[in-house]
Length: 402
Length: 78
Ligand SMILES: Cc1cc2nc3c(=O)[nH]c(=O)nc-3n(C[C@H](O)[C@H](O)[C@H](O)COP(=O)(O)OP(=O)(O)OC[C@H]3O[C@@H](n4cnc5c(N)ncnc54)[C@H](O)[C@@H]3O)c2cc1C
Ligand SMILES: [Zn+2]
Image 1 (cartoon, rainbow over the protein chains, first blue to last red):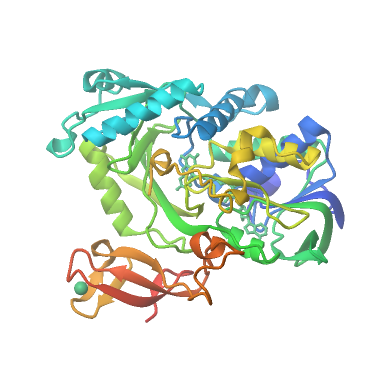
Image 2 (spheres, each protein chain N blue to C red):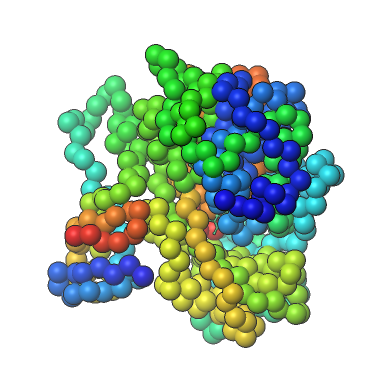
């Protein structure tokens, strides 16, 4: 139950049918954006989004809301840059306030190899349409006066890359904006409806089984985040996905105001400030695969040690809340979008710790694939078949985690 | 926090260890031309339940150990 979503939001709920042109499993950002773009870009509205709990209850409602395009391979930079641009105009397009705010992002380097990696990434970003420049420690301090350039005496800042287009948006408002836009055009969202099986006709997937009964569909798309292995297995599809917990925390408000998002791939932590002034931070995911959503003291201790050495003012704040999401991690740290090899079943997965920023572009591309049966060139490299073709898209350095 | 009982050092907290992956089932043939080892190299069972896996006691005795963990609760079960 989520009374807020069900009764307080202005969402036009419909009675479910037992057959749709398209059934999307998972009411997170990717599932809802796909439904929204099917309706708005392609006029396809005989669509149901089937959600086990309430919309946004997965990682889309749990992330740290960072939107950026400074990735490390050309295909990704283009994809995320397009997503960043779609986010920029999403309020205008949907008429919903998602609290989008362009902040810029500083990515600190503490070693010579880290500096080289940032430089290589900024050159690639420039070449592929995303603005990223290298800055000296002094320039970094001008952009973010709270930085301790000595890194608490342990992690001196040698330089940083600066990505001015980076932004944040309120994650659950993004969910509601897409849900409302899709529902107003006739899309059904079925909450509290876990998919328990896939309907098959020979080799083909022709619908989903739920506790409320079967629902047939022309096309089924899985957008179930960390639960994708279970759904794929229902069609005998094996995936290169492992599910890892990722944690985050938020503090009480900091009155001064932190300008940019600060990220650090050598210390593996990042910090930004919410519209309420609270400090929001995260770090690397747990090394062992797990479906547990328990929060750990180990994370609290490790992230606190790291962030306070680059931003010492954080010592004076108090942790309000700590939480966990379970992430679908691919072996090359790039997403997997498109065909599964089983007719009638598409997948969008591998969004790991980085998929919030991808929601507009991912949804738009999957909608186009469903509507036209053609894989858009923007996502052609991200197919599941890349592993069989020996074309993995290794980009761990850009994930900012490991 | 996850605690692991090291046969040499006793019960130690997880930051002392490095995860070394699941012990996958041994395939019938490790060079299957038809499959080009696609499954063996890339795919995962990603079990929601009990798995058998390797851990390295990096900040302790520096030995590898095998244990069973329930991924739904993140608890070591044996
Ligand atoms: C702590 C944390 C911080 C993060 N920070 C960032 C960030 O700053 N920037 C960024 O870009 N990304 C970030 N991410 C990653 C991002 O949140 C995810 O990649 C993204 O939300 C994935 O969206 P999704 O729609 O694929 O999955 P989800 O939002 O997880 O949605 C999947 C939905 O499927 C439903 N479901 C599962 N099983 C079934 C079933 N059997 N039947 C029906 N429904 C089912 C779930 O209930 C869920 O609602 C972060 C993630 C976490 C956990
Ligand atoms: Zn030991």
